[in-house]
Amino acid sequence: MGTRQLEKVPEPKYWHLKTVLSEALDSEFAVGEILPNERDLAARFGVARATLRQALEQLELEGRLQRRRGVGTTVAPPRVGVPVGPARHTWPGVADDDWQPVDAVETDNVPAAVANLLETAPGDRVHLVRRSRVTHGQPVATELLYVPASVVPGCTAAVSPGAQARARTVLRELQTLELEGRDRTVELGSARAEDAKQLDRLPGAPVLVVTTRYVSAGRTTAVAVATYRADTCRLTFGESDSVSLLAG
Amino acid sequence: MGTRQLEKVPEPKYWHLKTVLSEALDSEFAVGEILPNERDLAARFGVARATLRQALEQLELEGRLQRRRGVGTTVAPPRVGVPVGPARHTWPGVADDDWQPVDAVETDNVPAAVANLLETAPGDRVHLVRRSRVTHGQPVATELLYVPASVVPGCTAAVSPGAQARARTVLRELQTLELEGRDRTVELGSARAEDAKQLDRLPGAPVLVVTTRYVSAGRTTAVAVATYRADTCRLTFGESDSVSLLAG
DNA sequence: CAGTGGTCTAGACCACAAA
DNA sequence: TTGTGGTCTAGACCACTGA
Image (cartoon, rainbow over all chains, first blue to last red; front, side, top):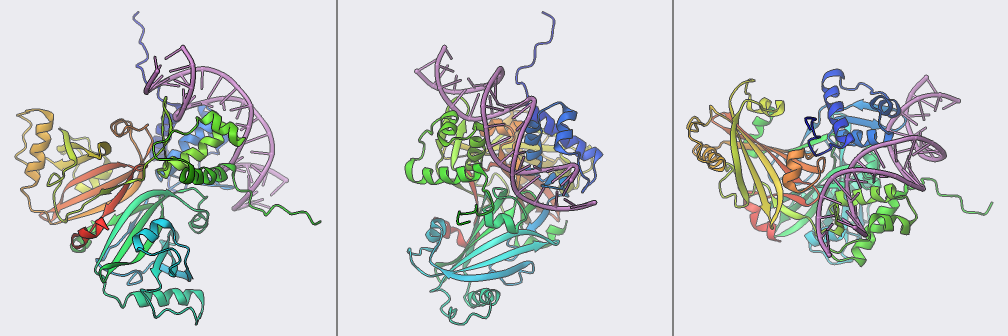
C-alpha cells in the first residue's frame, strides 16, 4: 500500500509532551512566570494528569521548572554555578564565605560508608559538624563533617558555649593540622527527610552528593558529605591556575 | 482520651515502602538476585502497582536496583568509581585507556551553551568528535567533543579514511597544542534518546553531565560534554599528589 | 508464547499556601 | 476558604525479553 507506515518507535506521550513544553518555555515564558495549573495543562494537551506530571517531573529534574505545593509551577532561572573546591588544599572553614556552621555533636553513630573511609571502629567517638551553604540568598547545600575525636583532642565536650560555637571550635582545631591531600567523589542521591527540609524540597528530591576525604599525617582525618540541590545547582571545579578563567 | 493520636506527618506510603525495601535489600538479597515482579510485590505490600513503582524508581535512582523491561528487577552492584580527570592538564585522548573514539563530523550546528563557551559565531565550522567510555565491560559514558576547525587547521575533511580515523586525527592534532588550563562543571541531566541507546538505558534516564573546557593560547580551544549513567557511576576527582590515596 | 517492566487513564483524597 | 501540587488507586494496554 502507498500509505505511510508508522516509522516504528511510538514515542511516549510524556516524552513528546516534555519536548513541546520545553520549546514553549524557551519561546513563550519568562523566568519566574507561573504556568497554568496541572489540571488545565493536562486538559489542554488531551492527556491524563499523571502523564502531564511525568513530563513536568523531567523538566524539573533538568532545572527548567520549579514546583511548589499550594503555589504552582514556575519557570526556573538557569542553574547557579557553585564552586566546589576552588582553592587547593584547604580545610573546610577556611575562607568558605558561604558555608555557615550550624552545630556540632559528639557521636559514635557513623554511617558504614563514612566509617570505612575514616578507618574507625564501631564505637569510636566522632565529632559531627553540620554546616549549610547559602548562595544568592537560597540554601543550596547541607554538609555533615565527620572528624574522629582522636584527631582533635583539644575539643572537649565539657564546655558547651552553644552548639554553633562548638562547631567553630572543631573547624578551628582542624585548621591547625597540615593538610596533605584531598579527594572527592560526586554521585546522585535522594534527599533524606532532614536534608530536604533544610533545602526547602520534598524528601526524596534528587541531590548531588559530594564526598570529600581530607588526608593529613598519612591518614584520613576527616570526611565531609555535602548534599547539593540537583535541580538548581551546577557544580564547578576549578584548578588553582585557572581560577581566572571561570569568569569567562 | 488515652488513645494514641497519630503523630502528625503521615509519611507517604512510597517513602515508607522504599525504606522497608532498602533494608530488605541489605539483609535478604544478594547482588544480581532477581526480585519478585512488580504486581506480586505490590500485592504483598497491599499497595497499588503505581505506588510500588514510585518506591522502586527511587531505589533505582540511588543505584540500589536495576530494572530491565521484559526481564525483571535485580539488585544492583555498588556504584563503580569512575576517575574523572585523574591527571592534571592533559588533552582528551592522552592515556585515556577506556575512552574509545567513535567518529567525527564537521558541522556548524553547535548547542548554544557550547557555542557560548567556545565563543564561536553561528555558522563557524566545528569538529564534533564522539567518544564512548567503557569500564568493567559496561558502557558508562558518551562524550561529544567540540573543536573549532580554526583550532586544528590540519584536519581537512578532504581525506576520509573512516569515521573513527577522522576522530583520532582531531585528537592527535589537539595534543600538539600546549594546554594551559581546564575547568569542569557537573550537573544532573536526563539522557537524550541517542545517549540513552548507547548507555543501554531508556530515554530520560538520569545522567551526570560533565562539561570540560580546555584552554590553550589564552582562549577556549575545545569543549567536551560527557554524559555518565547516574545510576551506576560515582565520579571521582583526584588531585595529582593524592592519586595514591584513591586506592585506600 | 508467557511474563516482565513501561505507559496511560480517570478518577479520588490529602497537605499546603495564600487570600 | 480556595486552589495548588502531592499521593494513591484499580484498572488497561503496549514493548520487550527469553524460552
